[in-house]
Amino acid sequence: MTKDVINNMSTHMDKTIDALRKEYQRVRTGRASTGLLDEIKVDFYGTPSPINQVATLAVPEPRTITLQPWDAKMIPVIEKAIMNANLGLTPANDGKVIRLNIPPLTEERRKDIVKQLKKLAEDAKVAVRNIRRDAIDELKKQEKDKKISEDDLKRAEKEVQDVTNSHVAKIDEVFVHKEKEVMEV
Image (cartoon, rainbow, N blue to C red; front, side, top):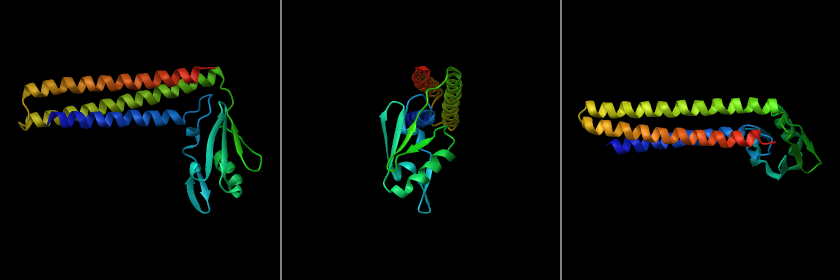
């Protein structure tokens, strides 16, 4: 009984950390990443499609992203979608390939990004704590319904707290790694 609750809780916490990592991919650092373009939709013959489904994305250099559309007629549409995404990137094309040059970040901008990253990490920690609260509530309900003993409840609560602490530590680890990447000149 308690193992199911704890395993379920741990799975939800892992998903929270995965979501944080995905959020961090979307944050623009001084380094090129195709993850910056993940949320951009392009009007592909009347159908909004993710940009990676209409072009090949690559990072040939640390500060450059290239997009090679499968249909050359899509170049202006892709450029427009990138401009409308407000990424602060200006596409340049040579008729076949679109290049996005990632400008280096200023120190002030880096600090702003770190604040943004810290807020995302805090939000993830809050989510983990909410998951912990829900798990403890479920365990207390089981104890109230006499499905588990009071001793089992105490043991399970300790285990829940240990799992929570390990996930919070993972969130901190992910944050520190991303912070280091952002502050790198």
